[in-house]
Length: 341
Ligand SMILES: [Zn+2]
Image (tube, rainbow, N blue to C red; front, side, top):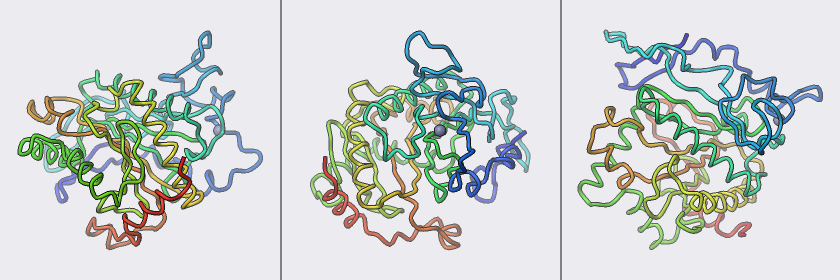
């Protein structure tokens, strides 16, 4: 059983998860798929995964059979699990028992190995699936925070080639996220605006780091990009969080994502990347009434795409300061000019 341990030295948390020990190695699974390899995420192989938690399916089809467009299953190599007691132990060695949700969203029934190859409908059902999962888990008041992320390629930590997304729901809010939402709220209290709104207004005026805008969303290379060709997508106005996005917003977001991935592919080829979808704190008692009740005004829904072109070393691990050799101004210029659709 895993434990979510509090690191008193760094004021952060670490998940000690022995079940991850048998997690497949990237080298054996991702880069070297043999001819005999049977993909557990492909349509027709539903019996190779644990029973599904949720699926977007064609009508008149049944759970754990074919006929799905996206499918959500528990992670076989879980970092935390929902059956574990929700229990916090206080002492010098402070920890939570390994309670939480660890789910895998199988993004498509077809053996597509990259978001770069998705069509617009695949982006739409993917976002709708994430919306449903976060909305469902928000009702469990033991889950304080959800991390939604994709790893694509060995350099990004992927161990399955078939396109998939992961969801980890925790009883705590990780330090960086807690501080980020607190900063947003402080900014909102002093200016009446969300930080992202101010950043986007300035970026659109300067127009040197904007890659593309569509509908209510803009994609830009952040001023202090930590990764070469890093792209952030955010909404120009308050549209709620991932679990409250409207169908219209999802259609706009899907159209912008497909354009951005096409541009990234034109510039970087088959690049490896991590993708993070911002999810605001889910429960009022973990962040306080003020922050919680103003969350949609102070924080914007956003997606961050982080190409993993360079590996990080001791300096980055020791200081948290990342050296990025590609300026965001150059990256945005190259992306703006390439493969425009
Ligand atoms: Zn597959």
